[in-house]
Amino acid sequence: MNYYDARETRDPAARERDLLARLPDQIAHARAHAPAFAALLKDINPSTITTREALASLPVIRKSELTELQKAARPFGGLAAVKWGAACARVFASPGPIYEPEGARRDYWRLARAFFAAGFRSGDLVHNTFSYHFTPAGSMMETAAHALGCTVFPAGVGQTEMQVAAMLDLRPDAYAGTPSFLRILLDKADEQGVKLDSLKKAFVSGEAFPPSQQEALAARGIQAYQAYATADLGLIAFETPAREGLVLDEDVLLEIVRPGTGDPVAPGEVGEVVVTSFNPDYPLIRFGTGDLSAILPGASPCGRTNTRIKGWLGRADQTTKVKGMFVHPGQVAAVLKRHPDVGRGRLVVDNPDHNDRMTLHCELAAPVEGLAEAIATSIRELTKLRGEVCFCAPGSLANDGKVIDDIRKYE
Image 1 (tube, rainbow, N blue to C red):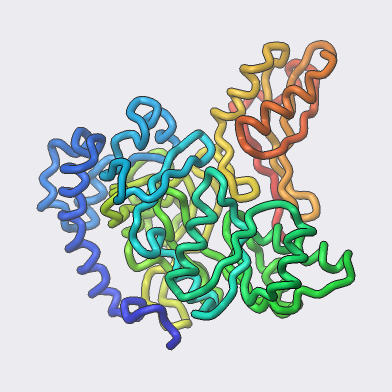
Image 2 (image 1 turned 90 degrees about the horizontal axis):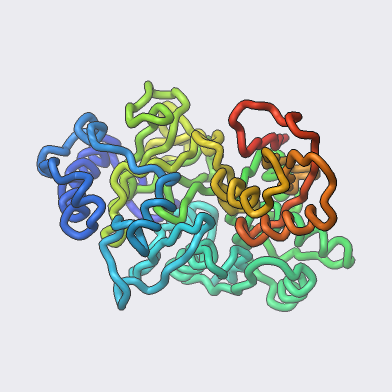
């Protein structure tokens, strides 16, 4: 079988009718069970929201607003329809912090579809290097693999030598994690004079995956595919063997809107990805991801008939993703607030040797002993990532309002 299920090859018009037919019930459910939506949509008659034009009249809730919404109404800002108990199997914390529920349903994050397109099958052993600590990434991958009948080795992050040793012993068929960490593991194996030749497939996410990296892995006999997913929505879109854009998941309704507004852009125009989810536990209606993308015309040569997007094209705001973790301007401000000797600051993100690096450039009038180390500690505590610190003269940083400057290049 070439497809996860028959829905992937439906007539596009039938898919659109199905999604729009499900919309009123989901809006009514969100109003009835999620207090924030009860207030936000109190004047809306759900039965009238049956077209994309009607949907576009509803307000957008943006990811950048979640931290403040959740501070005001713990734990989920009133956007979730579940409480602690059997219906909410786990709760996670992404940087911000932003808390996300995980329900008890099989393949809760719907990533099995993307794993299937990447060639994962029942009986595979999956070496999962996404974090199992705080963030949902490890569980997102594990639950998808289990839904397909795979066995999972919960490797998590770090400890490359131990990971290589385990891979040599267990000989996994597949890898799940960031592409950069897979390269680190392969390089470590080369350094040790051993081969991780059991790996034949990989599912990568959390950072950019340009064609040069895909080709480098293919040269080692590993076919790697990427997907676009978030901790709030689960799977949004996934790569297929056609390798022409990312095909939308069957259970999301996607819009591309002009950044900062809720207005849909013309087909093919770059804009912010806004998604309506049909998840009953976390019924996000017009959720603005902050990510930029664009619709690709036509259907995928792989035979899947759903809409395709170009993939991740940047951020609508200054939030950026580093080593699979979001870093927000508010976190940079919190670091600077801890250290009053520092004036303005700018976090520069680059990727020498294809490895993400953060450097916080700080304006400082006079040297302060131990300040660089203290700031680096604050960066690690507040973002859960390591960062370097660079001092510069007062007034030397550009006065353009930019807090995070992502200058990464991908070949």
